[in-house]
Figure 1 (tube, rainbow, N blue to C red):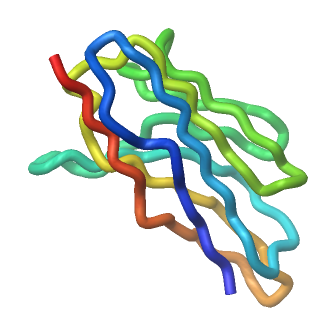
Figure 2 (spheres, rainbow, N blue to C red):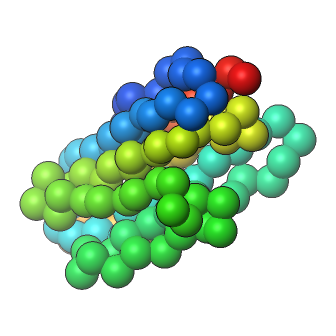
Length: 120
């Protein structure tokens, strides 16, 4: 059984920083990519950033220049360094494991999220 667990969210003032972490555990053979999405009330879930096992990254426009995604492939971990946070970044941040292969098959997995609140 695969589990995806996030950590690192919290309350921060506008202009501050947070570093999110996510680890996937279980009977994992490989993961194509891991990344971060966010969900704010009344807004559709949106991609923040992701990174493939080969290191190719993708960022949403709002994340470019402020957020940095990185990974540790051997540990099945992904990180999100968020700088210069704004109140509009307030959301539940969810970790996503894309094309996770367990040996029995390939599927996508989601964590339950870690909440980020940015005050003005």
